[in-house]
Length: 135
Image (cartoon, rainbow, N blue to C red; front, side, top):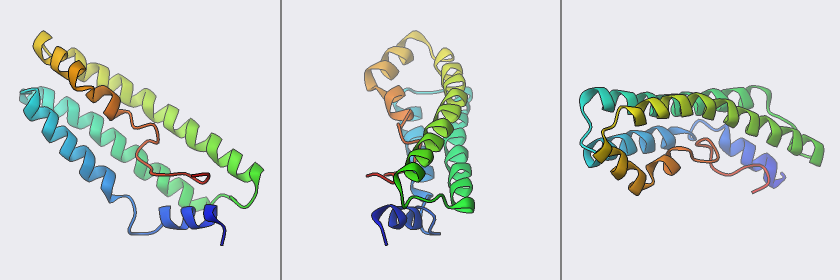
């Protein structure tokens, strides 16, 4: 079995995918405490986390339903394009929600948020999916 096929089998296993939800819930709780968010701000941040989790689950379901052919370069390339397009679409949604959350912060909270670099952490380049067919 090729490394790419093993990656795909691992990604589509029933044991995979719970880590992102737990990480996003922990991140939301940490940010809520550190930034002293009010209930409305916490809800806005939770909406960002929920969108990330939902997008990752939908992407996993989509990939695993049609199991792309990763045995050759054209198949892997096509799959990478599919992954990147999904991430771009998801990030556009998340960016709007993250902007709404950011705009709800007061000046002190915004400064702390920017110093923490949490906006960078919220945009995990892989959309919550570890690895890839070429890793």
